[in-house]
Length: 306
Figure 1 (cartoon, helix red, strand yellow):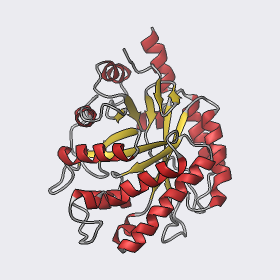
Figure 2: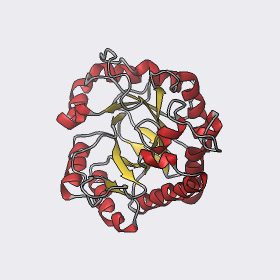
Figure 3: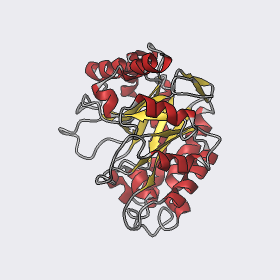
Figure 4: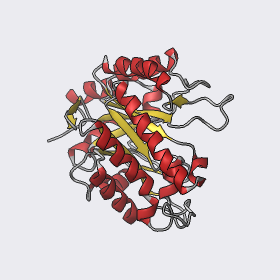
């Protein structure tokens, strides 16, 4: 029986446990897009604390429209690769796996069909750069306010071309990116996908559509799902340990072939362990918990082994 401390293999890569650092900002991104020493230290410290998988904060696949004063991580030029390689090496030194998140600002969702097609190539090139940096894979997100979120969400996409309308069209860019990465880099490079199970707004994504999205991205090559709620949504919902797990489990029930990350354990070690043991989810995402207590995974080992 799997538990919070048990290993998991994805695309031939072994995760030492079922604890995952969520893709939240470190606060150490810079205006030039390069990985800084402070950022490397931040991620290395969380890896040292024992987390099995880190999902990075976003790397932009195109330069931000207004570069001056906008802190970000860059994935849009080869020049970023050497420092990304240092980041990967610092995380791998502690036997932690790393998926680098790829993102594009929302304003690009208003691009023409031809420009979105070109943007697909930028995503694929950025994924190749992360591969060159030694990352275990990439994470794409349809939940954090970026271009894929703006396209896939029925409440945000008001296009009338081949990237708008029904779900198949709204998913077009995401599927093209996934298939392109898989074709170019191969099956041992992990592609993760972050999606909202619910958007909690009129006309937004619901569980039925989320399940369809999950099935289609897996068919295209995704190897792990990170289930969340969309940015800014559900802020008024009551939150208690395990509150969001039914959402992740609703996706897991139709995607048995890939592991599903759930969230909302609110820093409770025993709840996190029980959710893995009963099969509700396969991995547990931690955000603020690891920011303020990077040794939480080691503490879990002390508590649960005892």
